[in-house]
Length: 375
Image 1: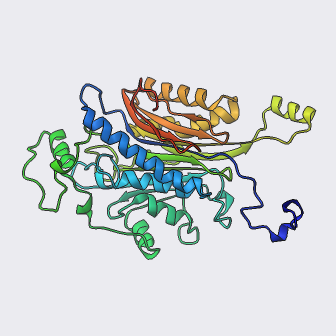
Image 2: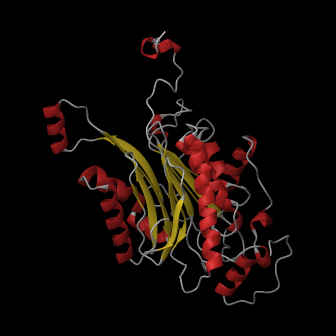
Image 3: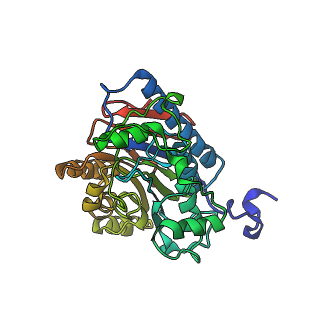
């Protein structure tokens, strides 16, 4: 029987939906690095790590996987690399402890989990101290609405539920690195020695981080072949933050956002009526990085989406204007944003933002400083 005459009942769930193009964009932090304070070795190490993250997420997308799984794969690479302020490389709070944050949001439920309610939207987690990979934890809890019906959860409760779902918890000392500890002490005007009595990763094993006293995050936004956009962000927060401080990373609308909508503006409705075409579905995903307190005050991530939805701005125009306005309030940082047509925008208002993109050709392109072209 020819493929066009095969009955629908004989088709797999995936075969019943046309495939679209896919793309992945990532960031690894912004705002606290300088070209003059860097070495070629440091720059190469960051770009290699970004490329590894891109390729990890690309593998998922190229095999027809969900955007959700692609962003988790990409962010995991950065969480496991102490160059970045997330997971293994997280910064210390004012009392010398690690408190992690993460979030995920989707434009629509993932293709492989159609049982997830459309209004589920996303989840933010904060004040984590034992989740080895916060990105894995937030994925597991997002996919368990019966266990976690909320949009925001913190600390031991989130980690205990995750452990029951098979997620890995570690002793808090796992996150300690010598460089971040010395940075923490230096930032408080205290002696760098003695080091805590834990099995800490020493400075000499890796290239030291390029950013100093970071406030940034890591994040990824992906568009999969089924038209779903997923945004995932993970961070250790800002260096020497107050105990219990919650930043923009788990704060829906501030440090992350994803949604889709039918075009409803008057001009578009008239055009659709005239042409007989159905309203176009538009989608966006955003992940931010920088000084999160300002992202919260400006509702940065959601503002980009709302400029597109209600003002009809392009992705690039909306993202650049919002990041510019962030700077006008003294907020340093940048965002990565992706729409349902595969357009990417990565504006920043500071000297650098670790960033990269990979498309269907499988070629990872990365950059660090504001005037660099992605290569």
